[in-house]
Image 1 (cartoon, rainbow over the protein chains, first blue to last red):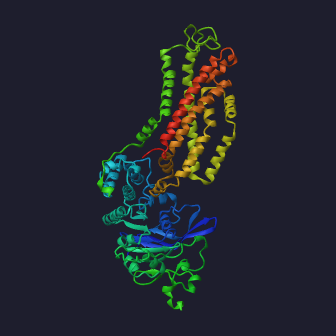
Image 2 (image 1 turned 120 degrees about the horizontal axis):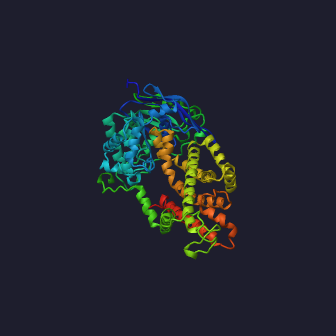
Image 3 (image 1 turned 90 degrees about the horizontal axis):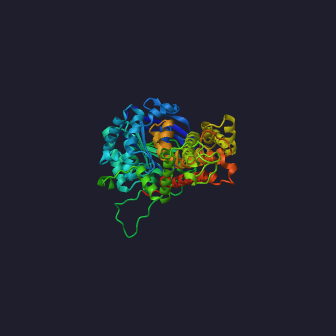
Length: 333
Length: 290
């Protein structure tokens, strides 16, 4: 881990103005992506996973949102505060993104080939013909059968899995250094999900593109990611290598997330094991109190948790965790 | 595993589907047939019936059929059949040109308002509302009266007063489409504003705009007739409205001279409306079966 990270996000704060006051959707989020690795970001809905992706892309809707402070660096280029034209050059070229809904992420009035070719032409001065040829190559790279014929198909003529492959082809067309995949398989069947994950892993090994995989699927993280960042209510609560975090989760929220994954391999006995859940819901971001945002749902809550926000601190070789119960267990008594 | 089974691939262009949808609609096909016959009548007819519409050929206001003049003669004794043909060309040209003008203005205003939002939208939509609250006929009369009654001013006047509906439709479509995921996806693929507006959003916003533009042709023809009826048109150019307007004083003695061009306008606008309805159904993705 001596190399400088490819993409580093440091203490990023994103605020949204709402009718109910200011919502801090990202609070001091820090993470780093090394080249060639897969970084997983997990958390429940509304915990800031997608907003992290948007802030990296410079696509935080403004207004009402705003990156209040912090720094996002791609190599040695600072992205926060960069002008739109500069960001435009980086988007697609250096950072690609795949969206959640392959059904709606493709423009319905153009063929998929045209769409991939178009994103190529935005960055490289390719002739329409050369761009189209490259687009067909990309479709082949994402293992679409009969790529040449499919390039002439319109999005609604393709299945969901096929469309997500097209999205991946489009995102990878310009050979980005980082690919952000925002819940790429949420809208797909389980079998197709596995295929897409396999494909992402293969492509990652072939091209060396770093992948930021945003998901709420702990299984996918366990299988694909090298490192994982757990987010809760706009903050990073735990991070570390996947092996460490999954085998020795330190934060009660991470423990809860892992416990929530149903286990298929267990014999279905006469009495089924109850599915576990974390009680309560993610709090409204407009009225986070002074303490830890997870305190109301936490089983290990201590008085201090309600008074002061825990800070992300090292806990083990690769792991960092933000929890008073880990840092000051003595205070529990 | 549909991904790998690769079923026989049939790639059908969306336009083919739309055309199929359109031709299943009987009233739309009737409208199209009607419009084609009217176009043939006005544009091919003069070659088969080469009579000068301005030449006095017979006794004024003679009844249709007399002396071989199928549709009779007008108050100056000019052949109404020839006038119908020549006038139809002008009416339709004005209708089309005025519709094009209103679509160009309306789409530009609506697209920028809907895409940029905020102050731009506020300003553009207030501007649109300003034109919307003006009584359209009165406003176009003022324009024609000020700048003189020529083909060009009449066309411009009609275009300038009727673009507001297109602007509103375009804006609402842009407001809806700009929030869709494929727009964010295109943006994350580094598209410029111009590209997003004209290549990503506009093609998807076209169906209602096309329908609106089509209906605009009909209403522009009516508008031109109204202006001509009021005497606000170039007297040296024959149009359907002009025929109605010039024969108006003799409506009690020779109703046919007013009724015939009126009926031609009615048929044309009807045909266009039927086509518009058919287009609406064919272009509406909710009705189109996949």
